[in-house]
Image 1 (cartoon, protein in one colour):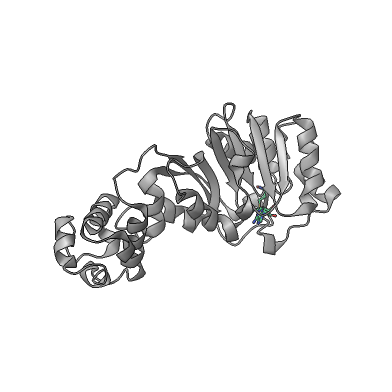
Image 2 (cartoon, rainbow, N blue to C red):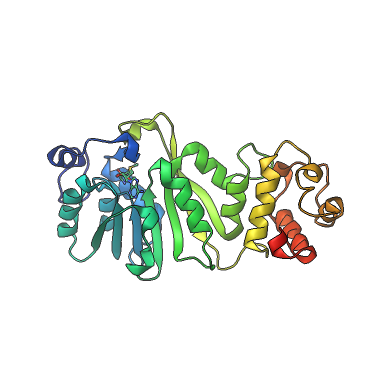
Length: 286
Ligand code: SAM
């Protein structure tokens, strides 16, 4: 197995520290250090940024990030069995790796890292979407992160970058693309992981835009898109009729045929509709 540093190969690390993969922690490890270095490079220049890594496990991606020159890495890992392996990496890169034994859902990275911050992670699938939605919906924009470079199940990655008219297009695409540039930068077969999962995976790179692509109130936009896509087979005039009296007129004013279905409508027109609804109603009514 190729190595990118003077530390032992990951198979040896896993064997010597007894880190057998646990399904309930979403543990599918990347053991090819050339691959982890490629994922690290997909995050762009790391030398001028602090990195949040969620779920480092035995540290394959962590080593990729450090070998690629990351200024500092904060690695948040729930499984304490991984800590001795991560401590060895910290020793090999003095002052550049901090490890937190914690649930990533409870950590505020800004307490530990300086700006600019990039998030890079081979996420556990069970918490991946929840973390992504949180990172995309902070109380204030721009968010704490400059970019997110994240591994997902391929179907989830396709939902993040989907365009109107496709089956994968829905709330996640709108949420991600409203305030970020999103693209798939790498796809991986199951055999890239140990143990191999049942599904293919893909790395998505998201860059935070300074301003939303089109103006809209975040809560109203989220509510409109949730309502529209909860009944994605219905015509929008029916799916959205509870949102406002005269919804047909508002849809037409937004350039949306009232007989269209949610998956045909692009982000710009959803934002226009959200603004028209905001003008018409007090936000707490929506
Ligand atoms: N980054 C490693 C790699 O690429 O080989 C491991 C990836 S594995 C898919 C996901 C890792 O996330 C596991 O090490 C698991 O223990 C950890 N993990 C699971 N849930 C977590 C949580 N809520 N907070 C922090 N780490 C978590």
